[in-house]
Amino acid sequence: MRTFIPTISYTTWRMALPLIVLVVFVASSSESNAQIVERGRSVGGISINADGVLESARVDDLGRLSRIRTASLEEIPAELLGAVPLRKVSLRKLESAIEECTKTGKELPDGIKYLAGLQQIQYVFVYPEQRDIVLVGPAEGWKVDDRGNIVGTTTGRPVMLLDDLLVALRTAGQAAYGGIGCSIDPTKEGLTRLRTRVSKLRTMGNPKRTVAGIENALGMQQVSITGVPASSHFARVLVAADYRMKRIAMNFEPSPVPGLPSFLSMMTAGGRGMSNMLPRWWLEPNYQPILKSQDGLAWELRDAGVKTLTEEDFLTAIGDRRHTGKANPIAQKWADNMTEKFSQLAVADPIFGQMRNCMELAVVGALIVKERLTEKAGYSMPLLLDPAEVKTAEFHAPKQIRTQASVMKKGHNWVISASGGVLVNSWVIADVVQQSDAPAAARAKAAGDGNDKWWWN
Image 1 (cartoon, rainbow, N blue to C red):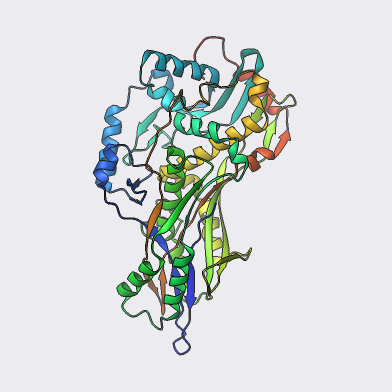
Image 2 (cartoon, rainbow, N blue to C red):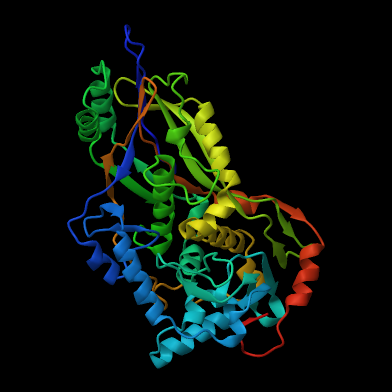
């Protein structure tokens, strides 16, 4: 699902003064951020209150979250500390380790919660003789960064979470029907009010009053999540990444990586008008074709990345949106820049790395279901797939965001904010497969030594 970016242009006859309106979304909250952080409700620099209203978490609260998580972090076993190119995680043995904890009433150790420090899944191997499916990829020890994220000790890349893996596996089947995504959309009524208000503007007048009028006209905007539970950590990551992308695009906060200016700053005073156009951006997985062994027991995921896409919609007089299939050149340039810089961004702002991890787990889930890997393995993942056996974290589901506009004067033009979205087309990725001998050779090298350890290097 994609987030629409309301953009309305109005040009006066005498002054030739284009007024470009691009609307951003933030929120207010009736619950203090401190309360939310203490209950672990802050993910990716955002907080969502009990009414489902989203806002940015305060810097002080993020610092408190970081201190709380650092204090509760367990000592990392020595064998998990170092960075390794390929760490293997057995799903069957992981399930057994989780079951042992639940039987004895023990809390899951950090090693399980953080999947032995996995930061990417490069291979998926099936071992019928061991009744097992093994996930393989680079990994390292973990730490808490200053925003409360769990990241690798040397690379700063986020580690994968058991919680997100469980959601990905449990929703993989339904993801075939529409994918996984999040969207923040203005209402039809709000767009109609906005169009009416902007059509009456002749000059910017008092910028603060004009902006306040635009915010009131558009009103509350709706958050929708598809494919995964709206209250899950997985969903929270998608929404947080979408929100952070908006903040960077709209110049509400500086880009954390060089060479990624805001979309707002790229708008030029002499740029073409965008009358009634709605440019939108969204983030999607970006993979090379998956490699498959001849026997279908070894799979290699290649060049896992994220791309930013853009398109314009046309806004009618009654607030309806129509696809044009075209992209605004400036919006396209910003999207291409975001795609190019994404690897750096995923480390500089780890919520983007967490989103990439969730996308990859969704692709792995789709691959397991689509290719019936549990049947090939003779292992049905009974505990991992049962929400009653292993519960996942629950958060307040995001529902609404208030409109807020940000003004920038460029020559004789006034530019007011921007936005984005996330779409995880996991089954589309899993559909594009090429046969190769390479994954089989890697599978032979990755086999365990027969002990009960659920991970090995």
